[in-house]
Image (cartoon, rainbow, N blue to C red):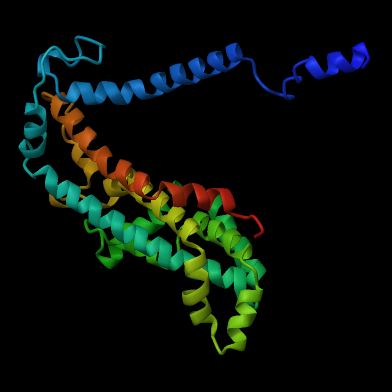
Length: 295
């Protein structure tokens, strides 16, 4: 056996191409951890400030309070003229109705654009996409005048009813791309069995579209829960305020601001969003990853 053959047998295999060295991996992970801490620090500081005594909130930037005091939560929940539970209930009602409206109406519109043939389909689809380029503030005044004439101002109707009319073009476009990836052979087989368009939509399209429906539901819930501008325009009575408007009442430029109550209620307002996202996380990732892909 030659020396070349012996060396080829005893020599260790070369490292795979593109494999990082241990030092490089450590540095990358250290950088990611540092960036994560920097991004999470404001959130952690807010949670820490919510359990601090009032006089220590802005006196230290550390995350560890000298003493734990939950008085800010009691004061924030009951300290206003209207209980913060009322704001929470209003936000829940608006968010749930918005999710239902967007999922139902946008999925119906997307099914029509993706599967049905009708006159002017491409034109109306292009018009729908064009509405995504119109700033919200351009249509704000005409919408406000319309809702004022209908007597809907100071109610939740301007925030909810448009969602049941497929007004969010982004979700329609997202669902159209997903529906186009579902094989048409399923529709043809169902039609041979006597199914009409409505039954195909209900029995075939919706069960296969859970990821994109969950994606639309999560984004609808988060955007509605965090919305401040819409409720600010249409809601005037404190009994109809959402959480975001309720948080604004803790800060008053002309008198004393309750920063402890603000941070405490802000912390509680993040809990529903966190659990909603955690519950639907798998479907959200799957819906975003598979939208527009052929299956």
